[in-house]
Length: 136
Image (cartoon, rainbow, N blue to C red; front, side):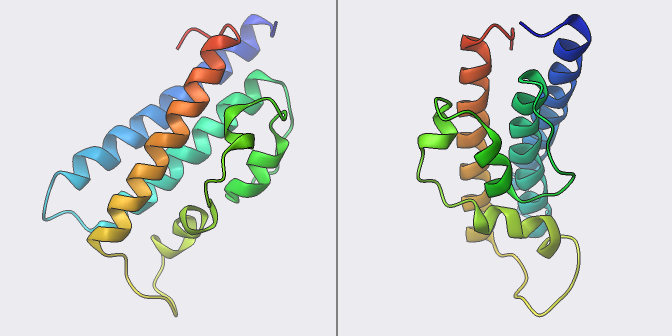
C-alpha cells in the first residue's frame, strides 16, 4: 500500500482528471464552444487519470502525452491494458487541439468521440484504483 504522500498525490492527479473531464462535458454541452477545446480537455482527462494510477503504483512515467506509452506502463492486470481502445487519435489532441498545423480543425464528431473515449478511460482507471484501495 502506498504511503500517505503517494496516496495524496494520486488523488490530486485524479482530481485534476475529474476537473478536465467535467470541463470537456460542459463545453460539449455548449454549441458555441470550440470542438478543439472539448478534445483538448478530454485528452488531458484521460492522460491524468492514467498518470494518477501510475503515481499510486509508484511507477515513474515520462513527461509526455502519449497515452499508449502510458498505458503500457500499467501492470497487465489493469483493465486499460486489456482493452483494445485506440489511443492514438486521443493522444493527437494533446497537440492538434492547441496549435494550428497541417491537420484539420476539430469538429463536433471529433469532440464527441474524444469525450466518449476519455469517459471510458476515466471509468476504467477509477474502477481499478478503487479495487486497489484508493478511495475515489
